[in-house]
Length: 108
Image (cartoon, rainbow, N blue to C red):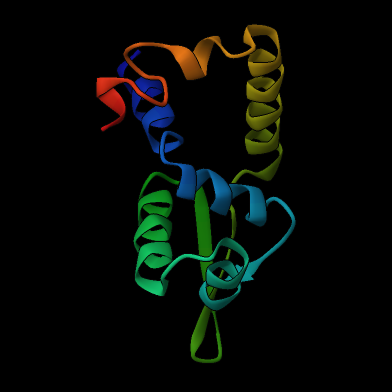
């Protein structure tokens, strides 16, 4: 259970989810992700390092840049789709959760 909790913790940051969603569309460089997500380069790089350390993304050099892709695209897409289905079933309950919801103390 601890490994699963660590995996879901990796998905708990909105910026990391945004990065994963963009990488689901194909390979991206850091500069591409910063433009798509409107985040600072250092923020994107930090989240990519976390995702890489967790084994969720891979990188390869391309000139002076690195190109990032999903390590396990099919499984990642299946997990994101399952999350969307579950969110559809729970409605606003997750967002309104007093502990982990938008206003919850654990979100701070």
